[in-house]
Image 1 (cartoon, rainbow, N blue to C red):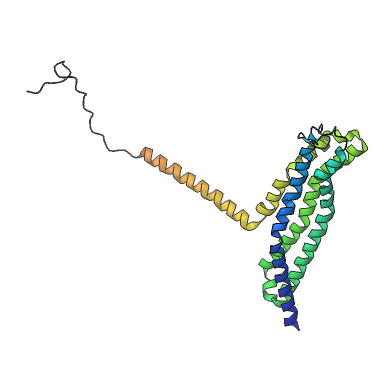
Image 2: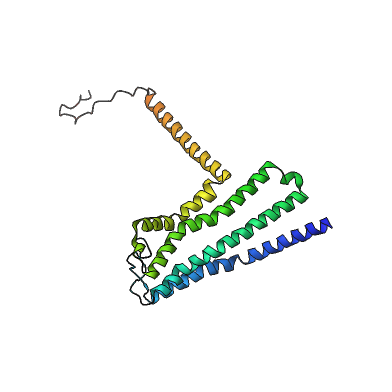
Length: 241
């Protein structure tokens, strides 16, 4: 019975992996095609322009003078932002449950491997990242959404210097946050980065020492330079006898 359960889980995992691999192309088409289509439509209909930094921080977006600017602001970003607030936590909760189920199955069929410190540390690290990723995303993007809502209600707080600063930092810090989360907070990547930095410093130090030793090593005495002989018969040199 246990062998049958293990076989079913293995076959199910292999099936979903094959299904995910077959959908990668569609993921790329949707992820790149939908934003491209919306952008082309907005540019073609002349909806892009100056928005007086009402819902941006110094860059052009949907023109604030367009009669249907709210609709285009939703289509070009805000509706996806609000959808992400709802879907990301749900997806990451499901992923965390899947990781816990996989860890439980591992401890059931491979108790020695599952109870090792390395496996537990990897599982706990993945669990922490699954918790932090949606929290960091919402903490960075919430200021943009807040300013958009303040614009809809006509509040003068939309131009608050604090909100504008937080908006600018949040919208531009997502790449850095991903780098910190997935690169600097990952031990193998961090170890390789430190090794590369130390290797570069060592090479520079060795190169500097080599240059210093070359300059300090006495060279071989060069042969005396000969006087340049002048034209014959003009006193510039001795005539041959």
